[in-house]
Structure formats: structure tokens, C-alpha cells
Image (cartoon, rainbow, N blue to C red; front, side, top):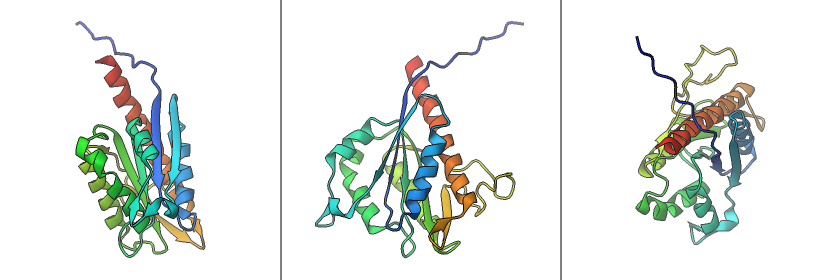
Length: 204
């Protein structure tokens, strides 16, 4: 019986980004955890970008350099706190500014993921994740949620039971350790999948 030799993936450099808004540093804490997870995969280069209110003029986010950088990435994770049942206004301004990338589908085929947090354990955070998934889908990106069932992981990954992305609870300004572990897990998953996609492209 003839067997096929496994194809070895080429060593490639994978560029990943986290774009987020943080008013009180809570989503910044999650961002750091996501970045840590991404670095578990060899050959990964990362950068994080914190949206600033000073970049929003007349309600429009303006940073062409960032939009150009995102086009060179193989994966992007989006993060925002949940305000009044949805994304923050600052993140929405950024999302609207990506419309020129949407028109050209410049982000199509890239990995995507998302996270949010709130002072309530629920707080309709799932609505925020759904928005981030819709944003990624409009750009033709490939969404990766959490492949970890709630209650079945030794480190408490996905303790709040959201498969679509990371939702986190803020308690006195701190993110629950299990939620940070979930963010690190998501970062590692995005990096792994982005590397596989990138390597596959190198083989074609």
C-alpha cells in the first residue's frame, strides 16, 4: 500500500495585529493577553494599535497609515468594550473608516477574531461580538472563535460560554484571570490558523 509523504509547511513570517479601543485600560489588558498568545507561534510578528479619540475628526477616524498597515497583515483581532449593548463610538468610527478597504476587499482572506468586556457578566456583550463578526465578514475575512467548550477546560477557558469570541468581566478595574487566559488562547489560535493559511499560499 502506497503512502503519501506529509507536505512540510515552509517557514514563513506571519504578521498579526490587534486593533482596539480602551477607555479604562480593561480592553488594553485583554489586548496584551491576545498578543502573548500570538507569540506562542514561531515566526509571528505582532503589533497592537490603540484607537485614540484625537484621531476622530467630525466623527470620522483618520489614520491612513494604520489602514495601509492592516493590508499587510495575515490576521487581525478587533477589540472594544461594550457600551450600551454594542461597540464603543470610537471603535465604530474606525470601522466606518475601513469602508475604503471594504470596497476593494483589501482584507479578504485574512484571519479575524474579536473580544469585548464589560462591568456586567453578560451586559449584552454577545451583541458586540456579533458586530465584530459582521465587520470581518463584510471584509471577506475568516472568523475564528473559541474552539473550547465552556466548563471543559482546566484553565477555565471560555468560562462565560461565548464560542464566537472572548467576552470578559471587569471587576474593580481588573479582568478575571480566566478571561485573560481565554484571550491568550484566542491569540494563539488566530496565530496558528494565520500561519497555516500563509504557508499554504507559499506552496501554491
